[in-house]
Amino acid sequence: MTDSSTTPMVLADGVSKSFGSNEVLKSISLSVNQGEVLCIVGPSGSGKSTFLRCINHLERVDAGRLSVDGQLVGYRQHGDKLYELKPKEASKQRREIGMVFQRFNLFPHMTALENVMEAPMRVKGIPKSQAAARAQELLARVGLGTKGDHYPAHLSGGQQQRVAIARALAMDPKLMLFDEPTSALDPELVGEVLDVMKGLAASGMTMIVVTHEMGFAREVADELVFMDGGVVVESGDPREVLANPQHQRTQAFLSKVL
Image 1 (tube, rainbow, N blue to C red):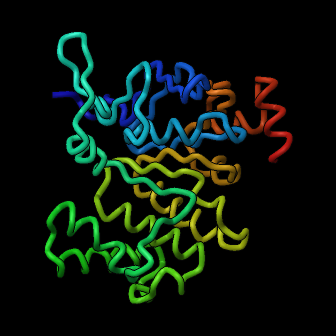
Image 2 (cartoon, rainbow, N blue to C red):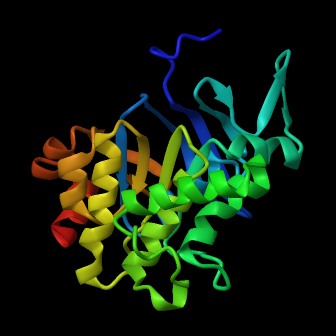
């Protein structure tokens, strides 16, 4: 039995990933402790989203290893060999990792409440009345307590993204991954989604956030990682990195976005 107080929630050790001849991740190593918020920033194509997708085995790694809460992601080890989990086992593991994408991916034919209820009922077999009560609670938590009977088409982008966050929370994940959750939103709607994420962080949720929102990273993150060209170029206290980047590539990137 591992000691959960000392086991990192996420541990990446030499993680590499290629698509054909394009090496997108080059031996990424980092860790995130329970209750911490890690923000990952960097230019498009730097490998940020691919790394996030590897954490819940939506992409398989080519080298290195990833573990969540002390368990290998997507593989099991026998002796010194790794064997990939069967899809059913991998999806069971994935239940404990919530993911929020740029696009909200809500079911258009279901109300907000039904979108949040669906996975707990279908995947966990939770009774409908119990799933509905929990979904209502989660919609209230993201500021949408009165919108349960609305369909996605009748919600703003910011509201749809908040429903997507509630939907991810409905599975009671131990870890939340956010892949540029505000990049598809109109500027005036960004704040309402970031406020929900700040509340999650304050409640002790472990979060890895790929973002362009430097103010959020400065205020909420415990650690900031700057990625470029598939490598971690620089990492550290967000206020330090943003105010006084040490690496030329970080300086060049931040000069364009700050």
